[in-house]
Image (cartoon, rainbow, N blue to C red; front, side, top):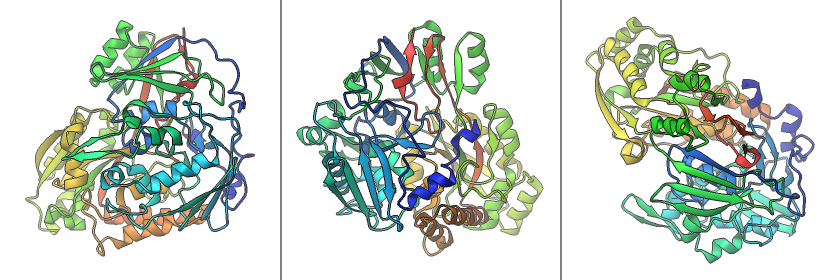
Length: 559
């Protein structure tokens, strides 16, 4: 299963240098300009989702539960072949760049329409790119996190963005869009498949005031487009969202450009508690759910349910904030913490079958993984000696961990915290536990306010590029790890340089070196890679587990 998430072959990777990738990534869908043919009959599937979406505008999506319905309603220019992170055509049938990686030309599908009946064409593509670049206020820019991370900044960086990567978009013909960049980014073309970069109907965006987003304290209010009228080109259309009952209803788009979905209706029911999701499945009130507890996999299978295990494409880490606690600024203390954690035991006792100890902050299926790096060994005696050498034998840390959440890389945060905290106590570190709800302050505490000393967090890759992992963690100074300039320039500038390297081999080599520097400086401790699962009842066919947790339900049927 791990081999399925390898990057494009060297032949396809050469397409960065102005060679189209159509021959390397033929779509398995029927491009059918007439809408893809007659729709198949299919009934309704009810899926138990662990959380509620924030909104339905993919530009402002920041978490998996917001992405989940968006992926069914929208298409991107390039997409990821189901079950892998390999690239294949989406709304673009071909794509190519100039040798410098600063100009991307997309050949677009013909005969595609948005859900509101308006045509998809190059003008619509450029409208979307220009919309993203020209977001009108700081609130909107602050919520477009994935665009900011991918394109750096905006025409007016009201939310503190960096110099923008995006320059302009031109539509020389209805089926040709040319996107120009101010500088190369090694994450392209893979990043063009991000759900946040889905193509929306320009007519609907304007009609329903898509950029109307307001902030009051820490709360955001989204536009009618984002809450009631999302309009893409995908295999399902938005019908309703019953917030009181946590029920999102999508219906089949019979005018889909590819083969229409088999299901007539797709319903996501928000069931936050994992035990409640399991009970609903056993009672027959839902057809499947995400993130079953690893402890339940065998009993679910014994009861006749199908547990579909995703290939591991994530990282769980112990983050160390060097800015909040002076002792943690000493690399010897960070090394001591790394030696104190028994990661073999953690993987064996807390993670699902197929999990592995991490040697760096990305899985080995991503180009840029440094195969020479070995996991830091569990060595309590060495940890005590390092603490003594650093004058930190009486170290006290505020250790933050999340509650009310299950993440692909972190199946039970409380149990993981308990195991790691006990390891730290055994080498003389005093641990003050700080538990906060995932959606009730935890992420703000560790990623915005930086009030923690240690914390548990992780990442599931969005696409197959080292920068999608390392740049997301360490690409800029920030409160999560307490990175600053010039102190941490070797990490931050190394990522900037690697990200701007276009040649695939040189891009990978640059990130291998970045991984080495990160593991020398230890802004955190990589813990494990885990294979999260998704479970469905017998009679549900065609759901393909994705290493990116990027499941598309257009192939699903129910009996």
